[in-house]
Figure 1 (cartoon, rainbow, N blue to C red):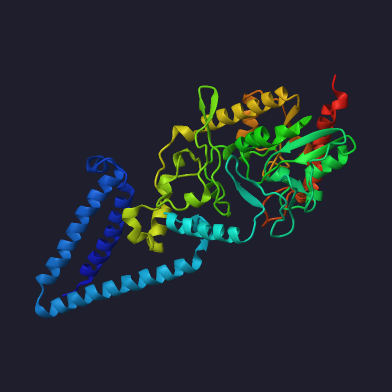
Figure 2 (figure 1 turned 180 degrees about the vertical axis):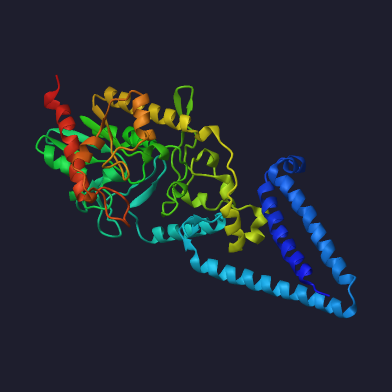
Length: 464
């Protein structure tokens, strides 16, 4: 008697078993068995279960009804099947572990993000980062109001960045900007593009403006890497106002709009090592309200047993509940074969009204309006500057990004230097591939040149 059909049934049963397992994983979170069975995955699971039962019945009957010698042959076919499957699974697990590329919060294979992301692993990595930070002061430090900021009188690990006693970017250690200004003060708010990341202070556009207007005004760089519009606004309220600047530039790139809807920096920058919480604003009518003040501390954050227990995690645009590990499935999360299979067909993430694009645009619009209004009340001259990033130069994109859209729909006065920078564009405007896609020394020079006339028109001696 030939048992090739038994072998075929065995392989089919194993494939069906895997399919049922995947469908059961997708079913978790359904309100009940009735809701699951009425869904497409539920109906498929039901059909697969019936087919699996039929395959198992066929295998059992084929072996039990066979003669003694044939029964041995049947058991041998089953043993060979199990041996082949075991070798395939073990080999696949080893190969996938070799191919996986890890970061602080992710694992990828061939650029494909592996699900589920394991909270205990992520928390463990950030605990190690925090332990190292306690042994040696870091350039970026936790801030109870802003999430993070620049430490006072610091030097970065690579020696490229320095900060003043006031926590502003400087050209060397020990500097202080507390002395009186020669004439007026120009304050700059922004993210890493304003800070001048990946270049020395002398190559930043902030420094170029300072050299341009240094005889009339000093330029103070309040830029902080990774900031969103919300943090720029809060930095103005807390840190900039006390300097009583004459001119305030809030410069941002498109992604800074998205950052406003982040509550945790490790989700916002998944490949980085920033472990901080950040402010999160919502609109109540037309009034802004920060829902997470005071911010959770980094030491408390990574002691939570699950990412789902972090405060206001559902308000983080970068958080997808379906991407993270589930306690009941912990026994399978160690299998890279299982993780690759569920990653090929990711679960659908339910829409959340609190992170919709419409809300994102509204909150940013109100933040920028409040900045303009508050700076005006402080008798400063505010200017919003839109900075183009990689992909926006030299040619304009065929669609409108949310940054320019927010400015246009909000009828917010601003300076968009994209067209100006496009006129002087060369591949050297941005850092070369493999870096952080910031402006190079040449890009910073061009950006400063594109802002010069607008800033010059705002100088105090030109006030009417």
